[in-house]
Length: 241
Image (cartoon, rainbow, N blue to C red):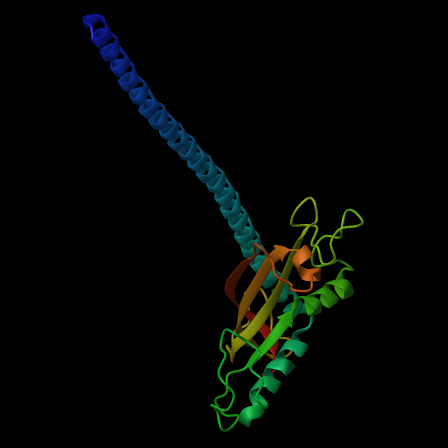
């Protein structure tokens, strides 16, 4: 026979079981919330690290772009000095580029590149001659015994490093200058007198490239960051076209 006390005990036990089930559900929700918060914090941390690395990468690209622009400007100045000391080599190369006919015409310049075979003869063919950094270096050595870039300050640096670009000598800079659009002007440059050939106006297009020196000695030759800039100037030199 069930008494009132037994019924009260049964109701109490039932209420205890309900409270236990509710607490178990609360514990599951708490674990889920904790996991979500940890995941969110992890994502925020990864985003912050990625943003910082991208900012460093962008700063590196900006620095190499600025260096390449300065190297291109320097290449124009060095090539103008080369023209002042060795104009015959430039003018003879320019004449040779305009005198080749047919599909054998070599067009090394990017500034006025035309596919081979477009001109059946030499008449009207655009002239082009390239001044490489090695040629400018030879001119510097003959006239002043100097180098195009500063000499290395320490031993053991990567091959091909250009020490004047940064302190740790791990950056390489190269340039090439394209001489195009030469034409007689009949008027000498300011402060100059016509002593040899006729004065000719020509366009110098400097293409400068800056990248880590270590990439120059690896098998692939690739670099995670590299900067390239182009600069153009017009100069007057004396010679025979």
